[in-house]
Amino acid sequence: MIGKCKAIAHGSTALDYIFREGKLGSRLAFHNLCSREPKTIYEEMKVVSDYNSRCRNKFLRIEIGIAPQDEKRLPVSELMGIAHLFAKQMGLDNHQWVAVTHKDTDNRHIHIIANRISLFGEVYDTTFVSNRAAKVAEEISREKGLTIAKEVKAKKKYQKTKASPMREQTKQQVQKICYALLDKYKGTGITGHSMFLYELNKNGIAIERMKNKQGKVYGLKFSYAGQSFKASEIGREFGYRSLQKNFEETNKKEQKKPHQTIQEPIEKKEQPDTGYQLVPPSRFSISRDNDTPQVQNSIDAVADTIVSAADEVVEGLGDLITPSTQGNDYAETAWQRKLRNQANRKKKRGRGL
Image (tube, rainbow, N blue to C red):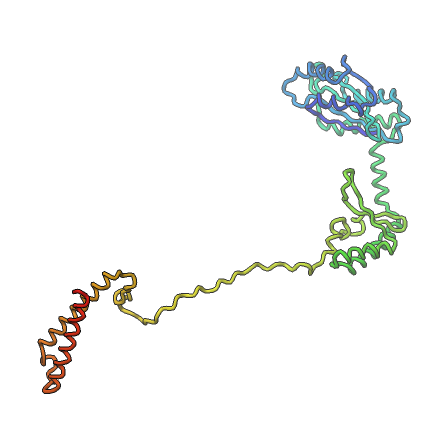
């Protein structure tokens, strides 16, 4: 027999739970209570618990587990006596409590819900209350000759440490076969995984998936020569998830290198090599591409006027500019100048200036 105890705040919910249809087995005891239903029991307990306004967890929840081998020896009347004896040794004589049995699990067990506030307004001390409940359960078990949970636990622990030599030998054989096949097919993908399982079965080793209550796989079990071993006993490489990772192909996907973008140099417009210039190009080369025809004509006219004036000056100066010009040379020079002047005048008249 085993006992547990805990202080709780939700007394109404706990009472509804232990009296729930489908779980309730037998009503064992109603101590210091007149009511028999969960709602009225809670209201009756609340009248007493309201005497203390500072206590938060005003209820106790106690569970008493009965060992399967003791159930046939304990009729309802005997369970009723255990409930009263347990509550008395826990010091709940002056408290309100109710005890029932549950039948919703394989093992029969007793539920007790108690008011933590006594009939005199005192608060029940819950220091190490769970240890106290376990100790009371052990004392009652010894008194009535029932199975003691502490001794069963110690016996199982001893049996676990004392392993069978035959089992150890079988485990070593399984480990040898499993590691040899793993080294053979490691990193070979799905095909290697299938061959691994095939050769295990060929060597007489069966693998079984372990599932929880929700149907989800949580581990593997290896069976060989009438012995069963958890995957962790064989080796960490043989767990449910780790075993599958061992067969992943290493060269299947190469690690992608970071993409490097090579930026080509922007082609610059070719510019004439003007060398080192003291004056910026804008000072001596002015573009006239965007000028209107009227502006262009005006500029040309001004230029022709300047050229004509220069020619007249040169004509007036005569041989002052060309002192070496004499005779026929002078006449030829004058004639060419005259023709140039006439041409310039015709050009002016054609432009309407």
